Amino acid sequence: MEPNVGGILDQCRLFADIPLESFGQLVSMAQIRRFAKGRRIFREGDPCPGVFVVGSGLVRVFKTAPNGKEHILHMVGPGNTFAEVAAIGGFDCPAHAEAVAPTVCALLPTEPLQRALREDHPLCLGMMTGLTLWVRHLVGLMEDIVLRDAAGRLARYLLDAQTTPGGVVELPTLRRHLASHLNLTSETFSRTVRRLTDAGLIESADDNRLRLLDTEKLRMIAEGELPRI
Amino acid sequence: MEPNVGGILDQCRLFADIPLESFGQLVSMAQIRRFAKGRRIFREGDPCPGVFVVGSGLVRVFKTAPNGKEHILHMVGPGNTFAEVAAIGGFDCPAHAEAVAPTVCALLPTEPLQRALREDHPLCLGMMTGLTLWVRHLVGLMEDIVLRDAAGRLARYLLDAQTTPGGVVELPTLRRHLASHLNLTSETFSRTVRRLTDAGLIESADDNRLRLLDTEKLRMIAEGELPRI
DNA sequence: CCGTGGCCTTGACCTGGATCAAGCGGGCCG
DNA sequence: CGGCCCGCTTGATCCAGGTCAAGGCCACGG
Image 1 (tube, helix red, strand yellow):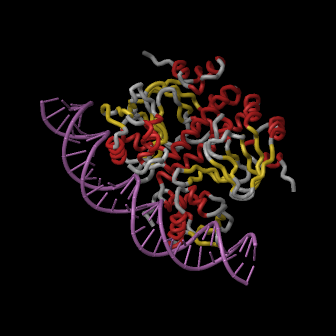
Image 2: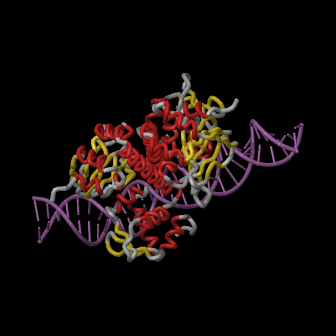
């Protein structure tokens, strides 16, 4: 099944409100890009190739320290974009990006995209809205890391995640990636899961699914309203 | 001397490239706002009044935890803006803002601004560029907090600051605010300044001015290329 | 099938920075 | 002018999470 550029862009809420003509312009500039699991999409400091719209798969956007420590800024799944800040702002890539699973993206190359933004007002409005969402994500992550402890971060993550009607959260990737996103080591992530489990707030449904048993208590932990468990 | 809306907006690089007509529209919607030192400008969760453009003074944008801990996301001085993300994105204020010094701002109210953005493409482009700069600031701050130790954060801060020809950095506000911005306590900030001073990398020029004595070594500390001092 | 590598959990120990407390100096206000 | 408050520095102590190591399990490839 050949992936369809229009289908990928159609799933992206950034482009939900732009007129057909603008959308058609994006479709005509977009290029399908496939990345095998583990493949580096770009490195920090590379010139920015453009905005990637994820059609399927999963991408981690991360920064690294000289000692090898990594911090994942964003896990990007279907319907979401990455690298838009650098593409729009005309910067080099400020972080690395790597496919965590086999991934298909539509790439909107920087030059034609910038031209389109200069010519097409509704597109400009849509991208601007997308940027505000990205800032919100970063501010929320910063708040987690700076103002919440490990249990608070995990509780917040679980409460914000999509749950099934039975209250089950499916972890979208390896636990060590989720840990990195929350600025925890995988050891601490594991221990924190254990603590919430022992306190009766969650239980393991299987390897990568957790059932939330007491969302009220989890909310209180996320907001720092309970003493340390 | 009555502050001049046009003068304030003129100093703001966000509006540097917009045509006179757009600029005039902003000037006609802008309102002068004054805040005494210590005055709360808005609280987290308040409806967003609009984009503030600082003409003079200094504003801290910060988040708080239930235990009273604060984290300053941004110190905003003349020529810079705050609350643009919420105003553009149509959110409530995601953080608190407080005047650290007597401050004069031009406020661009949310509703007319959003209308202007929908009608005025060059303005939209300019604001979009401003948002990319804000994202860059947040990503850089996140990198400092997550991937650098206290000395690395301070070194980076000092290297990025404006210096006089004699290599002197003037700290723009109380040390405890700078510490909060770097996610340090004022005790640790003080100790870290001491460590860099004892290592011969900086010296105190007076109470709130530091002279950088060895920018190469500071750069290496900022990049994690030196062992802990 | 077996070996290997990767992921995760768990225990022991360590550490960078936080917390608490005390003291000093300067500015402000009555 | 004097007292008070705030900001800062410094010392002592504590601690949440990091580091290191080991073991178990599972999936994959030869």
